[in-house]
Length: 132
Image 1 (cartoon, rainbow, N blue to C red):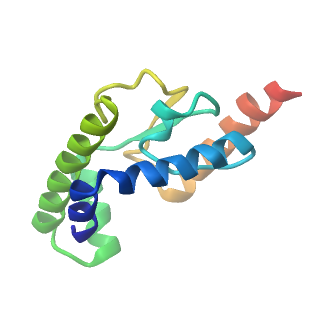
Image 2: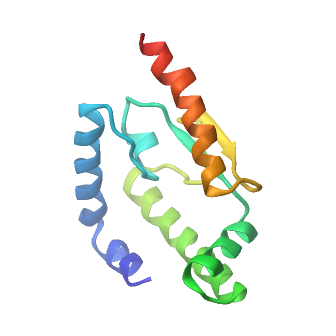
C-alpha cells in the first residue's frame, strides 16, 4: 500500500517505468508483465488474465498468509487506486476496456502451471508460427 501511495502522489513514477517498458517492448523478443503496455505499446501479443476478485483474494491469502477479509480489502483498495492512477495518467479504464488485447484467458480454475502451459501453447502457435 505504501507503493500505491508513492504512485498516487508522484505521477512521474509510473511514466518513467512505462517509458522503460516501452523501450524494452520496441527491442522485441521480451515478455512484459504490465497493466499499461497493452494500451501504450503498438507492438506485441497482448494477454489479459481474468480471475474473480474472490479467487484473487484466496490466492493472496495463500501467498501472503493473511486472512480472506483482509485480502479482499487490499484487492478492492489496490484495484480502485490503480484504476484512478491509470485513468488520470492515460485515460483508459483498466478492467473495463479490453480492446487492446489479443487474448483474454479466464484463469479462475487454472493453476499457475496450467496458465503457463496454455499461454506457452498459444504463443508458440499464434505468435511464433505467424512470424515464420
